[in-house]
Image 1 (cartoon, rainbow over the protein chains, first blue to last red):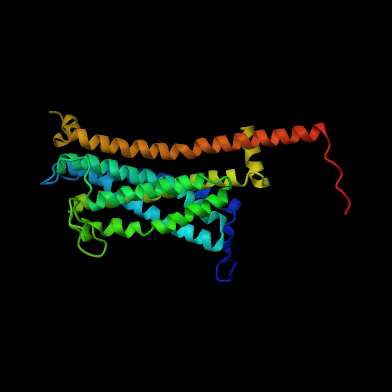
Image 2 (cartoon, rainbow over the protein chains, first blue to last red):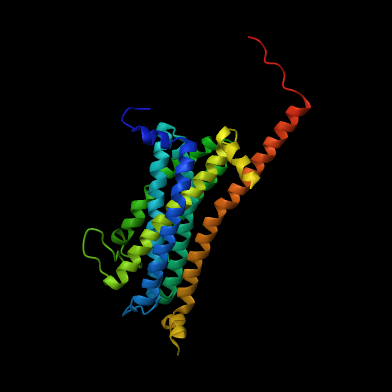
Length: 252
Length: 68
């Protein structure tokens, strides 16, 4: 490996080290996710006022928008990890990419269902072939394609390479989802929250949304750590460090 | 109407708001349980494999390493 990669990062890439590291961080990430999530729910469902146009139906935003952001964020992580895995053949990058896929698919599914439940009272329809909705559906199919391709190979590492390639090609869909509301003037509303400018949202409504966004980020970290740890145990079944864990847990 | 009833009614949108929150929680709970179940299965299978290996080794001692 090249000299410019610091030693600690190099060590973190080794499965037993990452296993211990992720095991230490996972409970903290999950605790933060639950705490922030609870605060966001309290703020969003109880403190924030009803919307003057949408009444209380708008409260779906506090889970819909963070889930939608996560569906794109996780895809981007999966794409970058797949790229690293294909170029440098780092086993841990393959694990991160492939174990991110089910979590991303879960958030994409939540986005589509909550959006549908929001669309029915506001637009009068559960579904429409709007640019934003369609590109988000394509995102779900990309996740399912990556998961399916990964499992279609007998050899796990070969599967990870093929699925990683698909993941990288699919990255093109992420900006399409993001900009679809600007490029095509269809039913889905434009962005309400703007990172680089004034958000079109009252602070009472904005802070629960941002808090939930943070909560979902921590949730993703916790879930990814759990999944990656389990996957490493499965992959490294023949190694001594995994045998030791298997024997230690049998005694309990 | 009590405060709780008022809260649960969600201004008449209860049929949309609560199922949305239910889906959010059910999907994420399922996502967080899945790795624990898999971990359990992986370690159980590994222990079974190790047990089979050691049983085989006890039946027939491993052949002497051929001298190069």
